[in-house]
Image (cartoon, rainbow, N blue to C red; front, side, top):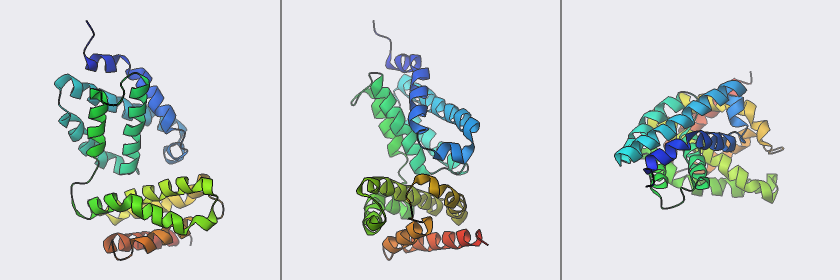
Length: 235
């Protein structure tokens, strides 16, 4: 008799954690943000917690366990300088690791991970609207910046813009402008590692302000304030 899905996932926990981390840490952000050793330690703890809660959800046949976990997790990760999009990336990489272990689309583990990712959507308000519009806004800003880059770099830039908008949505939802300002201060030093040549981070922020315009005035104002904070770090 085949063991329950929860036990099957639990038996593959080490492989799932390793595969997820390998995929995540291809992005230099994690090492730069937290340091190489700390990034490995915290990353392992984070992904192992994801798997542990997934097993609990499968045991109880309650995807709501994953929802509650994600809601409590977000605030902790924002305090660590991460964004909602980073959490979504965690679960996307875990989903890929599950599929590689035979838990493909349509399986219960995949469905519970999907529930977790859905729970990262803000329920309402300015942050939810910005989340919903982020793909369109990122695409519009990338189109206006295309002359700075090769065609191969455009998808990467669009992904970068979505990351900045995710930080902005988090700051709006938290009612804490310093979330965005602190991120901008740190990210300006990290930006050259993204490899976009002469495209400056200030230009990227300026284009985001332009596409936010009248559709998201509060987000635009918050971003403008974060830009002032960044300018102050140059003096």
